[in-house]
Amino acid sequence: MENSDTQENTQNNTSGCKSGFVALIGRPNVGKSTLMNKLIGQKIAITSNKPQTTRGRIRTVLTLEEGQIVFLDTPGIHKSRNKLGEYMVNVAEHTLEEADVILWLVEPTDYIGAGERHIIEQLKKVRTPILLVINKTDTVSRDDVFRFIDIYRKELDFQEIVPVSALKGHNTEELIQCIFKYLPMGPAFFDEDTITDQPMRQVVAELIREKALRLLEEEIPHGIAVSIEGMKEQKKICHIDAVIVCEKDSHKGIIIGKGGQMLKKIGSAARREIEAMLEMQVNLKLWVKVKKDWRDSDYLLKNFGYDRKDISGS
Image (cartoon, one colour):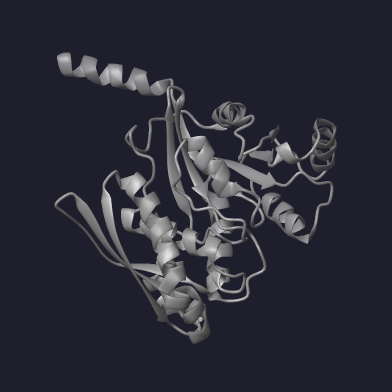
């Protein structure tokens, strides 16, 4: 009798909660990763001012009294030029099929270009509730925001249109409440203290790649990947061996820099952030290797965590 009461109470506790998967989609550099980090209150996805920063699908978890939201941050939808690009676009478009709610992020503009038109055509195929999120509203006037809302409203039947500033945190609480309106009832998928299901090695690799993205020249970032060769804790110090992989010998020289200065800058910036995340001292060692045309190699893409066979899994 006591066991059945406990079971009944558990059912009652979960019956009033909502949970579901929310996909963030949009063109490159519209602020998807910045918004997701802001919504969960912690940095998981890397950000930069360069497009196509996110390469894979990143899952993060927000647990509140109302329920649990599992965010799926996706690569920007763009025209692919190699196998890595194809992988990124496939990840983004496949995520639409498994989400309970879709957040489409756009920039505050009255111009709807070819990239947005392509996304609109993809969204017309799904029956999932779609929330249009107009990001970067801190860069335009209030009247302009209303004008942009009217323009986009004619393109698709959105459940909600929510203007936000991911950078400033404006209207993000309202966005969370809008999301909960369209999530199904059900128990949580993850423990309440879970922030992401990403392996720590992957998070560390992405943090190193972010620092490289921010410090290196324009032509190099898309051609680099980061591989964690070793990561172990000894005497309250985390020892990490990582390799930055590039496509050309000339790029290797730029990444290392004169007297190794650029590589030291990347390492120092990454180490500080990794230490803050792990809450312990970090000994980070970086190397640079050349793997020509790795973005078109199925074998190397899989080695660096971009396995196309995993797109439909999880």
